[in-house]
Amino acid sequence: MQDRIRLREILNSAYTALSFSRTNELSSIRQNAEKWQLMILWERMHGPTSMRNLFLLIVFAMAGLCVFDFFLFSDSLAYIQTRVLLIAGLSLFLIPFFLAMTSTVKHPRLITQLAMTSMLVSVTWVYLYFLSVAKPDETTTVLLGTFLVVMFSNMVSLRFSWVNNTYTLLNAMITIVIMNMVPTLKKEYILVLITEIVAWGVGIWLREEYRKSLVQRYVILRNTMSTKEAKIVAVASEASDWMRSFEPANKFSVCISVDWRNSQQITKQIEISRLNQELQLYYESIFAELDNICDTDSYHASWVADELFVIFNAESTDRSLRFAIEFTKRLAGPLYFELRSKMSFELFYDVGIACGVGLIGLMGPRGAKRTTVLAEHAGIAKRLQTHAKFLRKKCGKSANGEPICVLDEKVGHAFQAIYPETMDLFAWIEARVRDVSNTRFAMFTLNKMALEKAVGEKKEEPTPINSASK
Image 1: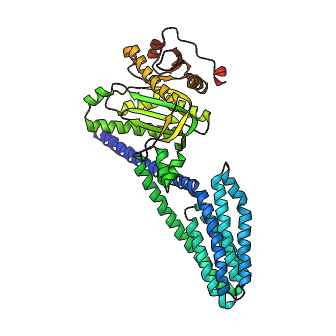
Image 2 (image 1 turned 180 degrees about the vertical axis):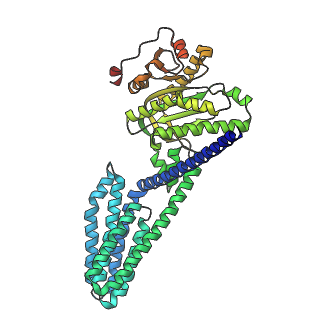
Image 3 (image 1 turned 90 degrees about the horizontal axis):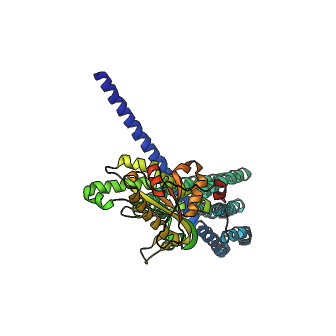
């Protein structure tokens, strides 16, 4: 008997250790993923500006250095001609890139990467050419200039990992080729190659340090705002950058309102510290579920006390509806049972969902703006959630369990089309909701007794899937 108990303890310890290791592993994977996502977001936000500034810097630098060529080189005309050809060539070559960035393009990050790599490689190759044609007494001057160009190019591109790596690889290849073509300058080109490798290594270290700083900023901001807002604010250089990302615009969205039942009684029955832990667990589970269902660019979420409000505004209407319906289905079932098993009290909440077109973006008083929606369907979602509360009371004890979800007509049709297997948990109801002209809504709940009692014995037949999908 004691051996069996000992074996059970060993197995429990091993399971705990494996679970802890797995949790740490997943946490590490998630942190690495967030680190790369932040850098990609930084490139998208600052890439076009960096490309334009780099082009202007090269043009003015090459033009200004033409003056110094008269004093530093005996055959200054050859250097000046090459610089002028570089400026003209880059200007003509980059016109399509700049035009593409002023219009709507599918891959703006790729365009930025190609343009920046072309500019940096062109300037460095020009200096490698200068080194090959320089007179013996001018070699040292050109070599120092080449060192400065290589280091400058690496510093400019260090936050653009693809640009930095591609630039270093191409330069190393051409340096080796020229070194074999001009054996008299082999020593100088070896020094250039060493400079390229050292500058590349320093750039990798600085880029990694910057990534860590972005993650730290993001983690701090994530405690005070939504995941999407935290990421954009973390990578923004100025307030205008992230305000521009949330500029108000008329868009289609799906709004979901979730509210606890008997929250006032709960606050009286549970200690403050314990209730704070329960509320934190609730919202952490909610946001983890949202992140699993869709990417952070597809939703905005806010909360006041125990009331949650989520706005789904993906790049298309279908994706917004699909994300919202999937989240509703999880709220009504698996997520609810998971929360009930973790909470120290009986958790009850109901859900209202509505969709439409409205103003979405960063709005509010100066210095305290928040991402919100100004639209009729936002108020309807709240009223439908209140009506779900009325249905719960109407059902009495039979509804003391699974959440009741009330959906507007469009979301209801989409729900049927996406999840036809839930027909027995779904019904159309007639109800009068304050300030809502439509009286036909959908009801979804896993509590069949509550469903039957809420709609009566004559439950309306669901709309056929084919007509619903139209």
